[in-house]
Length: 385
Image (cartoon, rainbow, N blue to C red; front, top):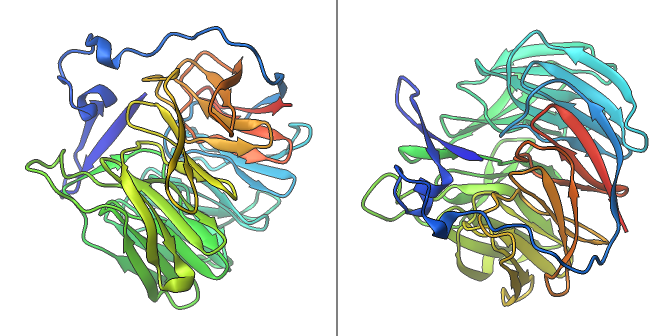
């Protein structure tokens, strides 16, 4: 797995560096044993995991592509321009549309409007029959999935601007821009539209809550503050998906911190701790889970931030953002395995090979199991009990 760093200059140059270089070792040698992926180990199985269904939805995958689940329906896209609606229970494709574009990100959906982004910054919206509704241009490239809700399609572009378009017409509704760093990660990040607001993590290490109707910024909180002598050292991107649990809003940054804010008390931080993640965090009602920069998986008490356990058996296996289901915490790795860990103490419960290519899209928890979008353009539902 590789993380892309985009430099904010007129030519929009892109520099590609491996995770090993970002982690602090030599960029010119990947042979340091400190960064070697941990071998798979034997363990006593605690769950039974199997593939419930597997469906081809196009070709390729990568950062910026993750399935969206609305009730019992899955919406997904692939870089070759295909957008699909899939039945969650069976994996049957209900419709598939070719946008005739090379896509950079997708999808967002509320079950009525489904949106993707093309390489040139074009935002494309489809209705729930797969028929194109409109196309419009963002101010620059879009590398994270659009978010759809509250009558809006919302994107975050590479000029550090959050832009909202009318879901019915594509007309611009509002935009919010913030200054950003010289370098920003290109990895898995997502925007939320939730309860009348838009929640977005930004490359400057901050989370914003924006009123969906007006575009007014209601609150901003710092997950991490940029520091260091070089552009690489100053990277503090908020990664993954912001997490909402009751009054708590939580986020994590690369080379930064993990923080939970209490939005019922004006966004006051109730805890924060040093932490670096390149994929993001997830939560349930009691705990927060994240893989650190070396892919050790950690669990923290959601109310206090106290570390409850860590699991080092998957070190350097380039893990995805975790997903939480009743059976445990699931993460994908660079060899196409999905691993299941106990929520109570982190011990390994199960492992399933869903494909030989790296899993880079975040795993998605559903009522039927864990949904995986792999790098071959397949959707896979993994059941575990």
